[in-house]
Amino acid sequence: MNTTILRKSVLGIAGLAFAGGLAAGPLNHTTTDTTGAVDARPVAATTQSSGVDAGKLIPHGVQGAQSRIDLDPEQTANVKAIIAATKKAGLDERAAVISIGTALQESKLENLGHLGDRNDHDSLGLFQQRPSSGWGSPEQITDPEYATTAFLKGLRQVDGWQNMALTDAAQTVQVSAYPDAYAQWEQQAADLVTQHWNS
Image (cartoon, rainbow, N blue to C red):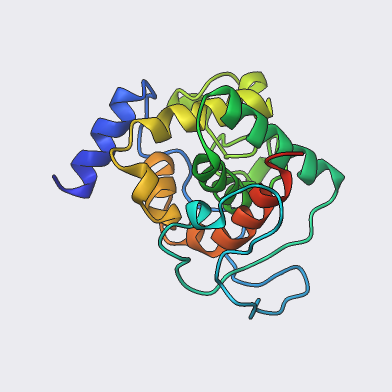
């Protein structure tokens, strides 16, 4: 089955009415951190004494150069909301890594409202979901729990998502114009899940 057919069937099964994809692209498709420097840290999964299996978070290693941003309290609260929604949905740490990595790319973990001319169509919230594409109302999409649950609903319909690279799983749900951009956030997403999964 080719990728186009797979995406159409995944999105149809998820019950999301897509007309050309969720978002035409990320808000910022850079591979630098907040200081403007490329993150040169090792890309192996980090291990901390959190009880989270680091090998499960990034089962096949990361792809490409990794980016990293410093999070403020609101962004950290959004990480925790994504993790809580993932647990509530009965999914594991890998689903949280994919969700957080996706939100890092789409919004830098900021719950974005309408951005006017800078907005990609009518994309809103952590995942830049579009009301016009069937994701929900603007109020729903800007609720982190709802937005995460909607993203996870789409992810569950992706056959074999647990063993996919983050960028492939995210792209199948998001249908971004920048399909490889999600890959750069896998390490930070795994680190955040390690830090907050049991907090």
